[in-house]
Length: 114
Length: 109
Image (tube, rainbow over all chains, first blue to last red; front, top):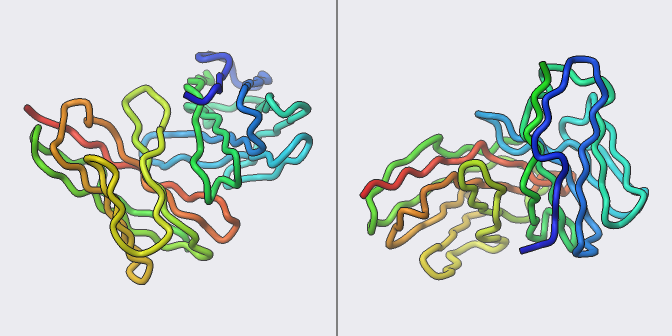
């Protein structure tokens, strides 16, 4: 299995508080992704990174920011959490560009915003 | 617009064959992925089709028709452990993946 971990695995927070989710990989893969998964929807891309300090927005980036200061870590921040951000968040990595290459997913973080 | 459609839920019997269909409409199409996701777990890669035709990998096969915007995943000799959601994803014009909502496959003894 690809070495990819997410922390925390579960989090309950209140509306308006900042939240940071961490994704850590040991595979030295260039590409990293943050997705959210909600019932009735497919995985939706929030942000992705194609190298250290190189990030770009995905389909549903509003209300989220990311940072990648090291190859192995990709952080997702909700500056001021809202109830609509209650979701399961998956981090994924790929060796090459994700639309051509297999993505390996972390175990997910279940976030509840009250 | 860009869209991926697949059935919400399917039921099949252990030992049988099931076909899960996926239709897509994306600009800049470069390939189609199938992933498996067991309840409460992360998706895992099953297959990637770029060219038209059938690709077989053990009990699982995946088919693509680019002209029809259509793919299917064929599962043979179904086992109880195949109970999972199957996610279809196609490339969009920004070279990112557009994901379907997934097909929940229920296997009955």
